[in-house]
Image (cartoon, rainbow, N blue to C red):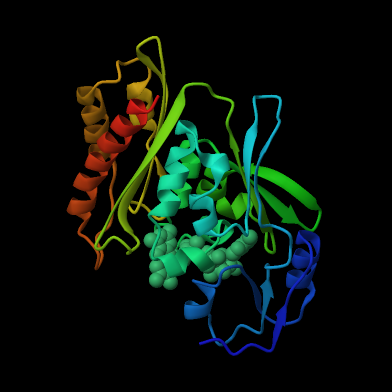
Length: 285
Ligand SMILES: Cc1cc2nc3c(=O)[nH]c(=O)nc-3n(C[C@H](O)[C@H](O)[C@H](O)COP(=O)(O)OP(=O)(O)OC[C@H]3O[C@@H](n4cnc5c(N)ncnc54)[C@H](O)[C@@H]3O)c2cc1C
C-alpha cells in the first residue's frame, strides 16, 4: 500500500524528469495508476503525476518516409481504441489491442505509456507497436531521443536511463499495402493475455513482400518471431503458409508455465495465434 509524502504534477516532460531525479527519496512516474496504485510499495516517498505534462494526443505527422502516427504517452487506452487517426488496415492491430484490453474502467484510466513501460506481465499494445516497427521518444536530462521499441525491450539496460520519461510512440504509416491484426487469448475476456500475437503483412503482386510477427506471454519481454518473418517473405499468402509460420513459432519458443497456463499450452496457442493474426492481416491488405 502507498504511504506517500508528496505528489507532484509537472507541467512539461522536462519538468517531470527534473522532478523525478532531483527530489529526495524514492519516486516513480504515475500515469493512469492502474499498476502503480494497487502494487506501489510503502517505501515510495513521492509520485510524479504526468496528467498535466501535455502528453495526451494522437496525430499524424508529415515525415520524409510518408508520415507517422504519433501517440502521446498519456493517451488513455479507451481514447486510442476510438481514435479516427487509426482507422486504416495498417494500424488495425493497435485498435484491436486497445479495444481488447481489460475492462471499460481500466481502459478509461490506463495509458499507452504505462502499457508500453510495464513488462512484469504481457501488456497488449507492445506486440502491435513492434509488428509495425514503432519507436519511442524518451525525454532524459539531456533532451529527447528516439529509440526503436525493439531495442527498448531487448536491450533495456543499455537504452533506458534512470529517470527517462516516455514522451510518445511513433509508428511509420508510409508503407503502402501494409495491414495488421492482433489476437489474444486469456482466461477471461478481460484478463491479461496468456498469449497475444500481432502480425503485420505487406503483399505485392500476389506474394508476401514483408511480414512481422510479435508475441507476448511466451517470454519475459515481447518476442519478435524473426524465423517466421524470414520464412514468409516471398511466399504466397495462403492459409497453409500461415499455418506453417505458426508451426515454426510453436517449435522455436520456450515459454514458462504459471497459474494462468502451462508452458505446453502457451507453445501450442502461440502457433494458433500466429496463423490467425497473419490470415486476418493478409485478408485486409
Ligand atoms: C483490472 C486490471 C486489468 C488489466 N488488464 C490488462 C489487459 O488486459 N492488458 C494489458 O495490457 N494490461 C492490463 N492491465 C494492466 C494496466 O492497466 C495497463 O498496463 C496500463 O496500460 C498501465 O498504464 P497506467 O497508465 O495505468 O500505468 P501506471 O500504473 O501509471 O504506471 C505503470 C508503470 O509505468 C511507469 N510509467 C507510466 N507512464 C510512464 C511514462 N510516460 N514514462 C515512463 N514510465 C512511465 C510507471 O512509473 C510505472 O512503473 C490491467 C490492470 C488492471 C488493474
